[in-house]
Image 1 (cartoon, helix red, strand yellow):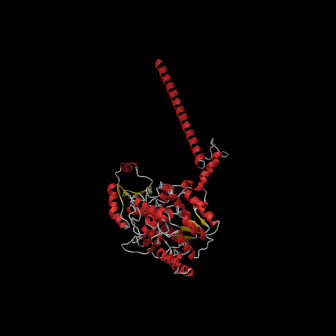
Image 2: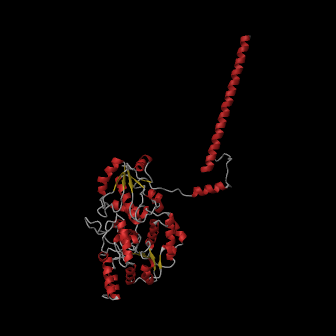
Image 3: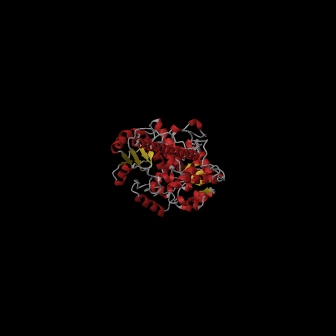
Length: 492
């Protein structure tokens, strides 16, 4: 009997244990299922249509402000980026641009093209901060850096800075640095620069002006230079918006001409052109020329240089030429330049002939330009935008801005750009001033000689072994233009 009693108690204990175990399993399962339901419902409510439409929800926000914000966020279309080009990275290319805004602009186009051709990663170019202008602007202060990177990702990988392990080389000054040879063929970069990049992993090109030849390059190379220039290099929204304001103010008063009057102190000192300057000014310009060691020409005969057409036209000469071209004095003349050397004294004749003479400083309030003060490249960017939109663009010297704007206006449908033949013009001016030519003779000669110098479709001149004397690629990027579309907008 004792044995039977002990066995019965054991069975009762086992039964109780089994029931408790089953209850715990059911309770645990219920908690897990309910947790899953709550989580799925919350996710469904927050990010999209309900996952469990038939279940009641504790997170209904149909009348809340959160729902309004959510709808606005979801209604904005996602930005679609172009696909990345996939390639084996041969290394990293750093570049330091030199010169003013438009010299650097052309150089950036060349460097992107070279990086693409070499299958390397380009680091966002460094801008010149040590030249005459001493502009501290970084790339992202002038150009839309994110647009620059994303719009070119289909061609080349661009980073804002080197990876940390390579960045330390820059900080310790152990990066291989060199200036590439000017006007080089693209094959020079493949045969000479690429092996260096493979060897050192990162190479720094410390000069970038005119380092890629104008002519003899593959068509896809030339087209990529154009794509960077006309599409990827977009100014910051701050510069673009202010440029649009200036253009709107000008358009409200009718058509306007942009006169790129390159008669600033740095240009006169560099070129040695002193026509119309007094003795004190000549001495000041000479001192400045000797103060900059990288301006290699020191002893300059101003009169001979002017007769060869190598000097910018003076404001007085420019006034005569505009009148000779029959440009009416009712036109607005926008001066795209820095401070004119000699100030009001030298501008008097031009202002008298064309009373609607304006500058960005006269169109805008000082507060509008406050951010741009002491940032010459950003000021030049404003002038660049206005120059593109003008009815006529007239440069008085064929510097970098004149050339790059000329090419951009060709791309925009061969917009009229009057390219002054300075060598001929100074001779005609001297004859008119001496009385050898009457006004009508002078005016007719000026108009006749410039009939076909208005930015029409033309072939770029090629001078083998003398690239400085041939037409600049960015002044006439004919590989990217449509000659049959004269007067219309080109497209790529």
